[in-house]
Image (cartoon, rainbow, N blue to C red; front, side, top):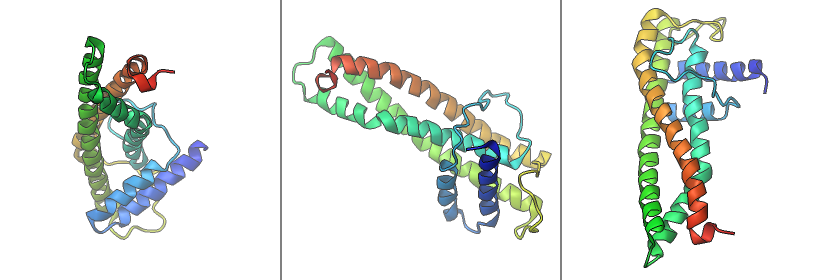
Length: 196
């Protein structure tokens, strides 16, 4: 998908955000963000990342979170299955016992982080929706080009706390995904059903 097509899709989502009247519609908007073919893995997740320049830039942060969620979903069930299988072993050796503990900790951490990511994404979408409405009005002029519309300084200040929380969460999720990859290799060696 071309950069222009991706940007246009984000603009469509921004227009939807500007038009929502109740927060219950935010979950649908977040689902739409998940459909954009943009891994957003070039984003700066540092605490000192610059404030967004354009409204479109703000949407890339939740998109990265949804991309990370897809990476988690690919492996999550295999870890649950391995955990269940390890708990059924009546006499676990030391490696199996340690792996059981590590998988349990991993699953708990993933559940905690993904739940927080979902809440923070909705919080950011709500702040973004309010910001667009304050700048452009609830009934935007059809000529309003949200692709080129910049985030005012006061709106950037409003978005910054939600973006900072989500960045921190995504950094932690990224690290947990790396741990998940390493643990998957150990799981494949130790769990009987994972062995060839």
